[in-house]
Amino acid sequence: MLFWDPTFVLLIPALALAFYAQYKVRSTYQQFLRVPSSSGRKGREVASAILRRNNLGDIKIERSERTLSDHYDPRAKVLRLSPEVYEGSSVAALGIAAHEAGHAIQDGASYAPLRIRHGLFPVANVGTVLAFPLFLLGFLFQFRVLMDIGILFFAGAVLFQVVTLPVEFNASKRALSQLEGTGLVDEKDLAGGRKVLNAAALTYVAAAAVAATHLIRLLVLRGSRE
Image (tube, rainbow, N blue to C red; front, side, top):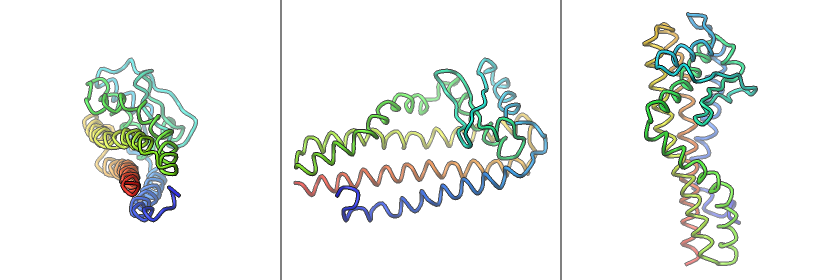
């Protein structure tokens, strides 16, 4: 079968990286969630200060309900922070709040990779849902056109993951620069925030690696039907 054929071994390194990345981000997050920041400011206050500093005071900051659900919504112009970040004043909370504010700054500056990622989002959603069923049907019934369509759909999802990398790295870079520039943290806080953001970045690298490896598998399986 598609998911358990011999090419599955190609996925093992990428999956191992993905499991490690999940462990790393959660352990690092929990570690610095217990470390209070020097300023004592809450995550929402830090995000607000960064937004005002960049003339983005019109962007709303809302409290979401799930852990690690922090994100910036460019359509609604809303920055949503999880309870631990919104109400928290830990080093982890400040780093994550600043990172999401970094996405808002990207949006305000029309950062090209962010625009591309937004444009690819619908394609990635469709690709993720339809790619494997279409490919599997084509593979089982030796209908090459269906396999090719499935590969094209999934290639769009892979491209989305690849474009996500510079978006996330740049948001973290902006976040650390803003934290340092506003004087909201000291050097120790900044070092801790960097560790949190680096751990989070590893999850995006792992996701891209898994997606790319899946695409390679599809191409190998497609070639076996020639």
